[in-house]
Image (cartoon, rainbow, N blue to C red; front, side):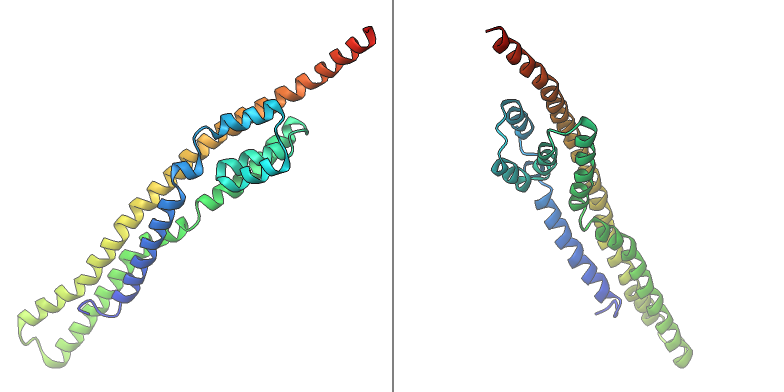
Length: 213
């Protein structure tokens, strides 16, 4: 009330920022993005040939890392470059989903102080207009009016500073997850490439043995 109408958009921004932070904290848990042992388990699937459609569907729906690895397994019989291209395409979509709402959080961090400054300026203008109409009057009222106008700036900063810090934190968290997922995808790509290289040799040995017998 003391800060004027500009407090309303600041409070709305604070509510939106809080909702985004809680949602991202839940969504970007490490266990939900990078389930422990999943990379090794998927490489064992590729090594032993346990790759039916149900496996791939469950894997893709389980986590961002699983979706990335499932995209590679879906084209496992193609050349290495095509598998790598599919991983990169899927990776862009996965990263985009992990960064969901972060631009909104960054926008709130940017406009919070501006909204506070706007409310302060409007409050000061209103106060000086009243001084022009009725004179200076009681200096204590003027000091109180300035204090009330500065409430907007303080509130905007209180909202913007945590929003900015958490925006940077979530960005760095997503970047770290991307590095880990890239490592797991590269390891799986090497496994699939090795399987492609050994399969023709195994078939050739089997053909030679059958001919000799």
